[in-house]
Every structure is written in structure tokens, then in C-alpha cells.
Amino acid sequence: MLSKAHVSAALAAALVLSTAVQAQPAADSLLNVSYDVSRELYKDINPAFAAQWKAKTGQTLAIKQSHGGSSAQAQAVANGLEADVVTMNQSTDVDLLAERGLVAPDWRKRFPHGAAPYTSISVFLVRKGNPKKILDWADLARPGLAVIIPNPKTSGNGRYTYLAAWGSVLAKGGSEAQAREFVGKLLANVPVLDGGGRGATTTFTQRNIGDVLVTFENEAALIAREVGKEQFDIVYPSLTIEAEAPVAVNEKVTAKRGSRAAAQAYLDFLFSPAGQEIIAKHDFRPRDAAVLKANAQRFPPVKTFTVDSLLGGWGAVYKLHFGDGGVYDQLIVKR
Image 1 (spheres, one colour):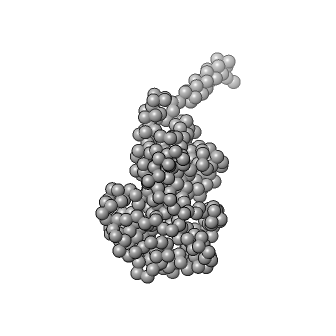
Image 2 (cartoon, one colour):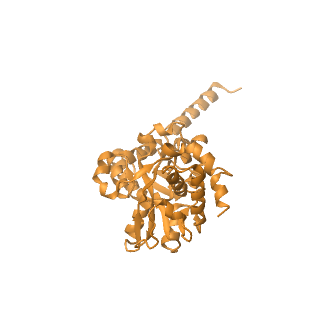
Image 3 (cartoon, rainbow, N blue to C red):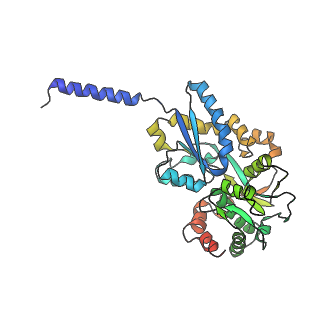
């Protein structure tokens, strides 16, 4: 039997250990796991937020980035990549993490605008002068045309391209059968399927493969600006899909690392006027009305639809099109 002295010593040791755990310093870094074509955006967001955080707390915070196909990135986090925050380009990728107990079930309610600080749209990037006269979605199914898109199985960018093409038929009164036929023809024109949006960009701009790259507006603007406007033109189709880019805190990892407050503040910053200005600078469409108005020249008006408004929502879309044996799998084997 333990003496009173031993018991007291044990209790004192436990109290010291408990106090030490409670006093554990907050993490001095964050990892943002994001999708492929947001690299440049977060290269600007990160130092701007870190400066604000240091001014507020006195803490120097190192913010790290990881980029790849959105769905592949979500799967990596689900498999153990210790992201403090995730910034994806479709809600199903965040829903996956909620199902795994990493993200709060009500993650959409944790931030404004359904937890999506900006949107983008799918556009066409063509060779200078548009020699193949590619003007709208129907043109992408023309025989002999080479269309570059990322793989819809691993890339949110590719998935939005696929759905934009499908929806372009339905929005003009076409049937599901006609949409299926059209998308099948488009996929037959795809010579290579890269894993993410940035890989598709490299294929088109550096490997010089393809007549048209279908990508997000911000990526097309970045290419035109940095690679050279003398090489490419951006074409806005008559209507296109609007993509929301959702964000969430990894509750499990931030609790483990002591980074919850910093992670929350980091994502809050994206919705602030300062964050929205940086978002607009990188050609993503900001949510803040004043910031959007001030940057109107970057964002030509275009008729859009969303997955929810036209295609029945992501749950139905994923099951029909992108699950194993879905419509996409059926079409891709025929190309």
C-alpha cells in the first residue's frame, strides 16, 4: 500500500504534468493544403496574414503550402497529411474530411458565403489569334481538335470542366442524352489527362500540346500575364460554370498542434477586405461587393450556372458522374 507521502508525491507530479500540458505553447506554423492553381494566391496571402498576426500577437508564424489536384489533396489529408487548414475548389473534398472526423460537420456555417471566400469560372485559353476559331463549348467536340483538361478523377478543375461542358448542353435546352454524347466527343479530343490543373497548364504552355486549355479564369489570366499575351488569348464562352472554393479548419490537427486560433484567424483573413483585395489581384472573383466593383475590369460579366442551380448538387453529381463505374468512367473508356 502506498504511503500518504507517496500518494501526495504522485498527485503533485500529475498536477505538474497537467499544468505543463496546459501551458504548451501554441504552434508557430500552419500548413495550408490546397489545390493546384492557388499557389500564387497563397504566396501573397501568407506573408500578409503573418504580418497581421505578428502585429496582433507578437508571434512569428511560418505558413507552409501544399498543392496538387484538389481531390488528391483531400485524400492525402484524410490519409494523415497534417494540414491545419484546407482550401479546396469543391465542397465534396471538404465533405470527405468531415466524414473522416477531421473537419466540423457544419463547416459551411463556420465562415461567410458557405465558407467560400471567392469563386472562379471555367474559360478557354487558346493560341494567339485563336487559329482554330474556338468560341464556345460546342467547338470543343469538333473532330481533329486537341483539348487539354486535367483528370476529373483527381482534379476539381477537371471536374468543373467536365460539368461545365455537360451543363452547357442542358442550359440551352438539351437533354441528358445529348449532354452525354457531347461530353463523350469532347473527351475523345483529349490527348492527355494530367493529374491537376497546373500539370495541364504545363502540357499546354510548355510541352506545346493542344489547341485549347480549359481552366479557371485566374489560371488563364496568370498564363497570359506571365508567359506572354503575345502567345495566348482568353476566350469567354457564352455561358460557363461558377466554381466556389471552400475552406475549413482541420479540427483534429489544430487541437493536437495548438494551432486552432491561428488557423481560424488565417481563414478569417481571406474574408477580410485586405484578403479580398489580394484575392482579386490574383484574378479570383472576390465576395466583397466593394472589392469586386473596384476590380471590375478584371472580371468580364458572363452568364453562369452552378452545380446546385443546374445539376442537382454535388452529392447527386458525384454519384452519377464520378463514382466508380459512373458516366465519366463509361465515357473515358470509349475515347
